[in-house]
Figure 1 (cartoon, one colour):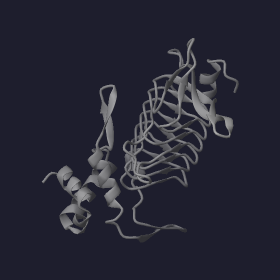
Figure 2 (cartoon, one colour):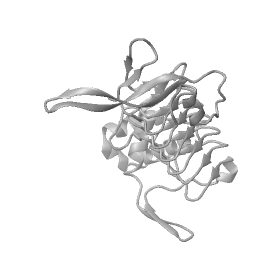
Figure 3 (spheres, one colour):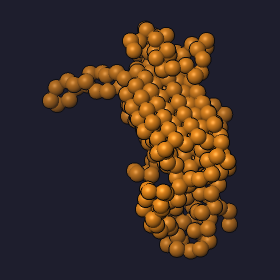
Figure 4 (cartoon, one colour):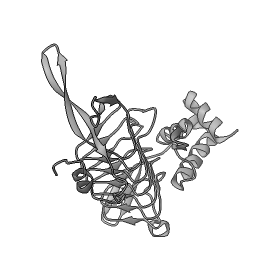
Length: 270
């Protein structure tokens, strides 16, 4: 049987997790993820294809693993997952105390400041994972992305989400932003500090004569800041968070430009 068939069968019948063939198949999927030869999601033209069966293998990897103690110098961990290794060979800069789990793919040229990348994630070339940023399980991060300090990219495992968060090439994610629940951020988009995006967050384009609302997707080159709108509740009217698209990143702007420069172009105080 193919790897996919074995994984799908085990997903429907968890008793199969006790069998050596199933465990071997899951181990093979995680190894392929670690090397970047398999992905939980991959570009498909202008859209993305989610490989649901690969995500299922990640979820089922946990119950077949046993807890063990991992010692790294004076540091000790107690977990089911091995840590990623051989960074020099991979061309990745890892600053203490950055941690990535085995089963996450980290491409050459990536810089990991003290940060965390979970199993199933894919971090492409030239990306900066800045201090205390986290890339949750199966998160897909494109080339030359900057995840600023404290950014939280949600995972798919707890609770189980249908699709991973996707941050496309050359995007700039500002400090303390949170992107979860399979939200997709388009190429070269800029998120100002503290933007929070979930599948229920209104993303409102205010650049035209009338506001245009979307959810779950930030179009390419959009410049986004936190906002709010008034919503009526039984107890009265209150402000609810949203995200505002206030402009477009200019073609003349260098892709590595600072967040401050991108916001200044759109007359936003920084």
